[in-house]
Image (cartoon, rainbow, N blue to C red; front, top):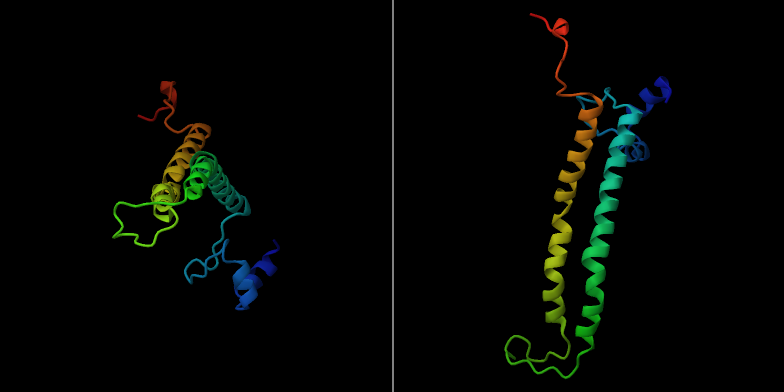
Amino acid sequence: MFPMLRRWIENSDWLIVRFLLWWSQPRIYVGRGMHESQFALIKYTLFWVLLLSAKLSFSYFIQIKPLVKPTRNVMSITNIKYTWHEFFPNATNNYGAVASLWAPVIMVYFMDTQIWYAIFSTIYGGFIGAFDRLGEVIRARSSLRM
């Protein structure tokens, strides 16, 4: 972006401009003139898009899709006679059974983002370390400073 236009945009108090910049530039005083490069912002966004797409596809095919048929089977059962009628005295459907079937899946669905983040950040950090040759042992003694 042109520097003159960028300065005008970052100093603008228009609501629409602030709304469009919420992702790339948080509205803080200290870092107002400091910018991440566009490439770094694209890498950051791509990281989260890949992470969330992997999480959502895994969750759908491994957690949610296998429970649809059992849920329909449980809901199709009629004329239920509960032995503990104190909890559901007028129960005609199996809403309690469906809730107990889906509750652990929903909890894991919401909590596994941190697991996916750990996996993706480890892989990404490994690639960055490998390409930057971090931890490489110097083989020539002449390159060492004594």
